[in-house]
Image (cartoon, rainbow, N blue to C red; front, top):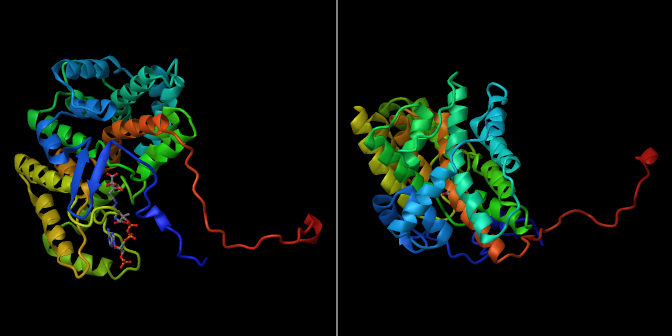
Length: 377
Ligand code: SDX
C-alpha cells in the first residue's frame, strides 16, 4: 500500500456506537440525546444539559433540583489543587495550568478509581463543578488577586462569572455564558472526546481521561481556535483592512483562518448561528458592534469563495466573550469548562460498552535489516 491510502485523520471512519450526540454535517444539525441544539440553547440551563448528558434524559423539576444541589455540594477547590495553580510559573499558559490542576483533582479524591455508576456520576459532577473554580483561580492569581469562594445563590454559569470577577454578573452576561456553556457541552467524537475515550478504553480512571482531553482541546485546530479568532480580529483591526488582510493570508501555503472549516459540518455550524446572535446582542449591550460586524463581513467573504468556508463554534464565541470583557487567553478554558461534562458522558459510555481502542497503521519502512553492533555503526 502506498502513502495516502490510509484513513488520514480517521476522516469518516465510524469507530464506535454512541447514544449521546448526533451531528448531521451536511445540513448543520446537532442533537444531544435527540434534542435539537437550538431548543437546548434557547430553553435549557447548563444544569439541565449536565443531567441530560450524564443520565440520558431531561430532568424533571425534582431531578433538576437534585443535580443543581449535587453541583453546588461539589464546589470548593481543595487547597492542594489551589496550591498547584499558585505554584505554576509566571507566564504559564492557562490551558496548561488547567490540565495540571485537572490531574491534581485525582489526588484529592478519596476514591478516584471508583467505577460504580454512583462513583462515575460523583466524579463527573465533581469535575464539572470544579473546572470553573480552577480556571477562575488561575485567572485571578495571574492578575494578582486571590481566588474567591463560590456563591451558593448563583447557578453554574453565573457563578463562573462571579468566580472570575469577584462580583455578581448582570442577568444578560449570566444568560450569555449559560447559552455558551450549553452550546459547547458536547460534540460526539471530536478530537478531545476521542482522546478521553481512548484513555477510558484502557479502563484507566476518569481523571486521566479528562486530563488527556484538556491537552487535546488546547490545540489551535480544536478548542484553541477561539483564542486565534480574536487575535485575528484584533490584528485586522478595522473593517477596511479585512479584504487585503485575507487576500494576503490566503496566498500563504497552509494558511488556516481560525474559526472556519470543520471536519463534519459542510455548512454553517448550528452553534455558530446561535452565537452570532449573542455576539450581536452582547455588542449592542456594550455599545460597540464593531467586532460582530467585522466577523459578519468575514463570514460573508468566506461563504462567497469558490470553495466556501463556514464559521464553526469558535468563530462567534470569540467576539461574544470579547464583548463580555473577557481576555483571549481564557476562551479555550471556557470551552473546557463547558465540554468537561461531554467528556465525562463519553468516558462513562465507553466504559459501559468497552473494548480497547487500538487501531492499525500502514508501515512504510524496511524489515529484517541486519543488526549492526554499536562499534560498527
Ligand atoms: C472545534 O471536531 C469537532 O467536532 C470539533 C469542535 C467541537 O465542538 O468539539 O466542533 C470544535 O474544534 C472547531 C474547529 C476549530 N478549529 C479551527 O477553527 C481551526 C481552523 N480550521 C481548520 O484548520 C480546519 O477546518 C479543521 C481543523 C477544523 C478541520 O480540518 P480538516 O477536516 O482536516 O480539513 P483540512 O484541514 O484537510 O481542510 C480541507 C480543505 C483544505 O483545502 P484543500 O486542500 O482541499 O484545497 O479545506 C480548507 C483546506 O485548505 N480549509 C481551510 C480552513 N479549513 C479548511 N482553509 C483555510 N482556513 C480554514 N480554516
